[in-house]
Structures are given as structure tokens and as C-alpha cells.
Length: 345
Ligand code: SF4
Ligand code: SF4
Image (cartoon, rainbow, N blue to C red):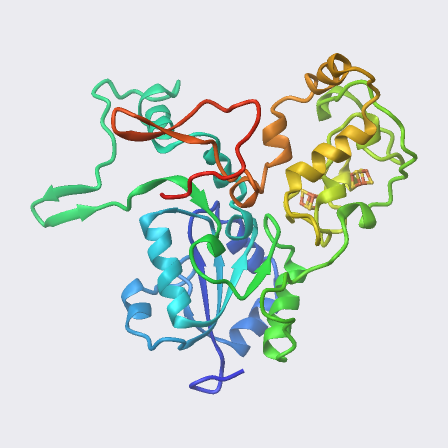
């Protein structure tokens, strides 16, 4: 790969995410030393003292590879996505938030106003009788302090800028981080647009037996001690393994937890929630709509289960927005979701 000083230039950035993807990089353990040896790390604000201005001063395409983690949910996330796209030859959507919105994307079930009101006024631990909220601009003796505008809609990285590769996972397993780095160093990357990972589902890595048992209710993990040999879904424990890309070694089912879908949809599945609904339907023992409803009533927060990591990239993308007092606000969730959501902001 081309470089200006003998080593390819690497950038790592953290937008709207929890920081777990940065930990995944550190979880490569001694391989991290190989990364530091092989690359010239030119931007990694989480770990080293780099400034945004240093990136702005770079030539376009000067960074060879950028691993960008985090969703895009405010103006500054978007600015950094555009800046790093412009300065990078190869931009990798690194981790579930950049790939699919992940947990921040669940905010698309509501809107900016409801989130700010809860955080700064209504939450049980908040003591804020004046209802003070963060302001976009605040004048202080030293000048104007600015905060980025918080968006109504959380977006994936590729809904904002073109992305070259996708490395899914919440966070990506260290072995895939190493595999991606080695592929970059040896110029063995798959075709642009590819997901760096496996093409089969978590079920294919899971040793539990499936024999199409039917269930009459769902259980929460604390309610039963599951048989360690049998498929969790067939024991009434929600498991997203059937629709989720493998790569983790079926980590969660191996410890009696249903897969939650953090590696995103398996190849060929466009909308993980739709696929999960059909998987769940195939194990429900019910003949009438009433019986189906009764079984589904035992699954708390089905939308949260079906789209836990993927709402921002799904066909739904967000709750429909309406107008109230001149502001865009989330409409209550309709029983039949709309397939063409507004994504204007
Ligand atoms: S549904 Fe879950 S528990 Fe069942 S085989 Fe697939 S990954 Fe394993
Ligand atoms: S089993 Fe599912 S939720 Fe757990 S790590 Fe693997 S892909 Fe993620």
C-alpha cells in the first residue's frame, strides 16, 4: 500500500459510540505492537494527543486507512465523517455503530426533543428545576463556546459518506481486527464494498441442536435454566443467531444467552428484523391470531429485540416524524410501520 514515509498512514476515530471498538483494538494485545510497527498512526484521539486541525491540514487521500467507529448523530460526527472520508484512501466502517447504528440507533424510536427532555428534566436522578439544557452557543469572556447540533435521526456511516469496507461487531472480535490489518498490509483486501467477516449465520457456528420444537411462550434469561445442548430459541429464549452474521464463534449462545445480533445481518438478509420475525414465527405453536398475540406478548419490547443493533440501517430506519409547533417530532409508533421514512435531519 502506498505511503509517504515508508509506512502506510493509519487513522482511528470514535464518533457516536461507547468506546468498546477502541477497546477491541487494544484487545489485539501484542498484535497492537505489530500495528504500531507497521503503520504510521497519524490520528487516534482516544489514545494519543492528536488535534482535528492536524487532519484538516493533511492533503486529500493522505491517510491510507481510516478505521471509523461510531454512528453519526450530531453535526460534529458528520463533519468528522466527511473530513476523514476526504483525507482517507480507504474508509472502514468499524463496528456495529458505524455499520448499522447499533445502540445509539435505537434513539430513532424517538426524537431529539424527547431525549433532551428526559435527560435534562424528567429522568428520576435529574435535579434541574430551571430546565437548563445545553446550548449550541454560549458566550464566555474568552469567546464563544460551541456544541454540535444533536440530530433527530441517528445514521450509519455509509448514510453520510461512501464507505469502502465494513467490519461489523459490537465490538468486532480482536481476531477480525487483526485479519483486517493483515489484509491491508498484504494488499489482500476483498473487493470494495465487502464486509470483512464470514458469510454464514451464527447458527452455523453454534453447536446447539435444532429439531424444530415449538414454543408457547418466551422466557427472559433469568426465568429458566436452559438445556445446554438444545437451541435456545426452541426453548423460548429469544436468539437472533439465525439472521446474524457469524464471526464471534457463537459467543453468547455458548454461555446460555441468546444472540442479540451484534454482527448485523448475515449475507443476503436485507432487514434483520423482518428475518427474525419469520424465524420467530416458525417456532411459535399457535393457530389463531389471538394465540400468536398471546405468545408475542411474552416477548418484551419486540422492536428492541428485532432491531437492537440495526434500526438505523433497517428498512424502518426510524419512527415517522411529524410537525408540532413548527418542530419535527416523532409520531407515536404506528402498528403498521412505514417503509419510506424521512431522513432529512
Ligand atoms: S438460534 Fe441461537 S441457540 Fe439456536 S442454533 Fe441458532 S445461534 Fe444457536
Ligand atoms: S452471539 Fe450474537 S450478540 Fe453475541 S457476540 Fe456473537 S453476534 Fe454478537
